[in-house]
Amino acid sequence: MKQDGRTAGRQDGKAETARSMSTGEVVVSGRAALSARATTEAIRSLLRGERRDGFISLHFVGRDRMRELHRRYLGVSRVTDVLAFALRGPDGAVVGDVYVCPWIAAREARRRRVPVREEVLRYVVHGVLHVLGYSHPEDGSRLRSPMWRRQERYVAALR
Image 1 (tube, rainbow, N blue to C red):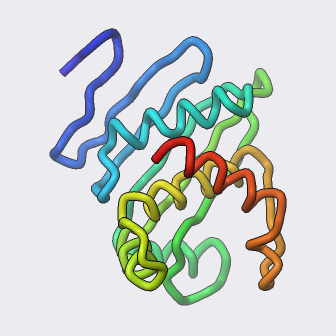
Image 2 (cartoon, rainbow, N blue to C red):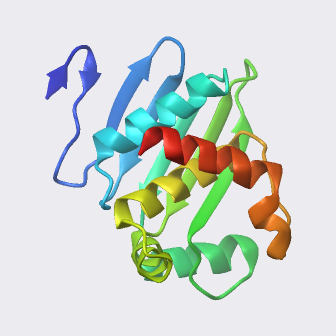
């Protein structure tokens, strides 16, 4: 279903596409507490905020699929929250695949006492920032890193 020249959110979990002259293309597949439409808008907003253009494909996947992806690509046989893979397009545009595990988001949201939707949004932002080239330390200082602070500013603005 089209609205205002963009593809509207779908409830059946099928992939959808939204185009914008300033932010490229975003494709969302799978289901989570954050709708495909809200996910697309969050990614587009983040790309605008970072003054970047590109193609982002975001997939909400179950814990078994996430565990398999984590094992296959990083050699770690456990489920994780977010995986992000970045490429550069021929014109320098960003091209990236982001995988988010809503199951982990729900578990972490309960632990942190935040809404699941907010935690899913946090993972979406986190993955896209990785695609854009941001990184953080893997130890306890990650919560104080510039990437984490940037992530939390976007999450607060997008809630």
